[in-house]
Length: 104
Image 1 (cartoon, helix red, strand yellow):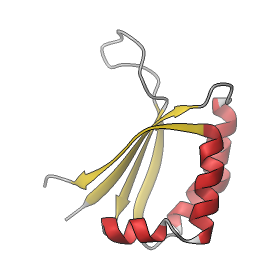
Image 2 (tube, rainbow, N blue to C red):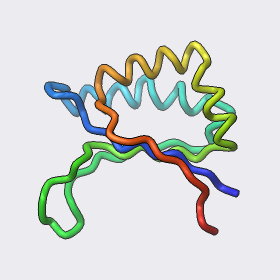
Image 3 (cartoon, rainbow, N blue to C red):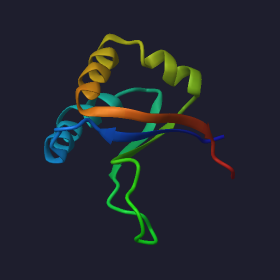
């Protein structure tokens, strides 16, 4: 069964999106994608609502396909992931972290 983790993120006030996206490419993707618990990982910049009305409540959506939710949680305690999350938190205010199985 495919299991995914979602992070609905908003940038901290004053953070330049270009700086954050460069950090994703340079640091976040390489570290996260080396994890045996992660099958795939992508970050999407949210530019608007589909109907064009209103303003999105988040800036970025992270979608992580994992081998197993408990394996993923355990990987998050490794020193390189702890350091990664500390850096990530300088850019992002976490709105919500979610997970669940894909309906197949």
